[in-house]
Image 1: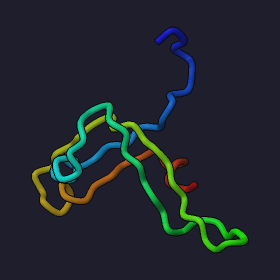
Image 2 (image 1 turned 90 degrees about the vertical axis):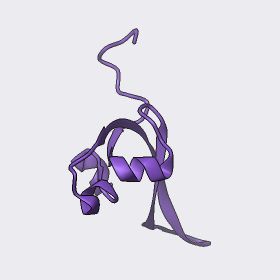
Image 3 (image 1 turned 60 degrees about the vertical axis):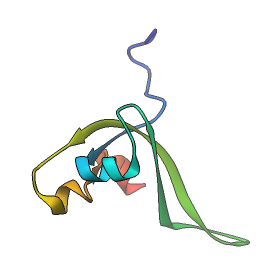
Length: 79
């Protein structure tokens, strides 16, 4: 990149290998998370929608983790 100190366009996310395979995503792809806990508007609840960049695919050898694990920065998870 031209500016090494610039914020990334999309925050990173890590996925379990089986989940990534089911979603058919590869490193660098955009993963969109939708949270039903959104904000109230005049037309009702609006879900929170945010794009992340798939930064890593991890495998733990445990199906329960590899099929459902998504790791993102703590501050992102709080928002």
